[in-house]
Length: 109
Image 1 (cartoon, helix red, strand yellow):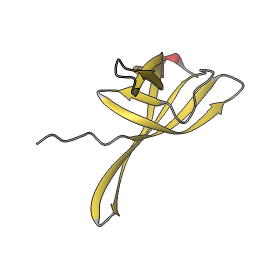
Image 2 (tube, rainbow, N blue to C red; image 1 turned 180 degrees about the vertical axis):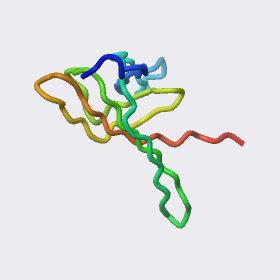
Image 3 (cartoon, rainbow, N blue to C red; image 1 turned 45 degrees about the horizontal axis):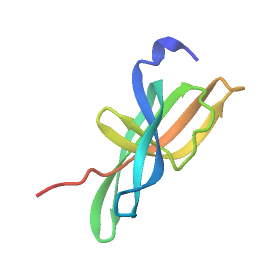
Image 4 (tube, rainbow, N blue to C red; image 1 turned 135 degrees about the vertical axis):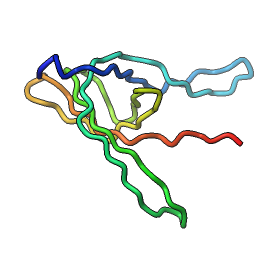
């Protein structure tokens, strides 16, 4: 893996559950790693879902090997959040290819 291509910075986040003062469980996202990455592919797929048109952006990141990345984690990159869909090892602990789907941003009226 060539380090010259790792020009972007991504943050891997994991959901953690804590209890607030009222005793209610609250899920929060905690950063577990900051990695240099290459953005390999950015594609937008338009499709119909629930009688409405939805646009889903898919992105593939390549990064150096990071042990413990799972599909329930998410990635923050360039002001957007991505759900990890698939993690593939490159070589023998050389790197990772992380396929993600962008999480829809909430619109406020």
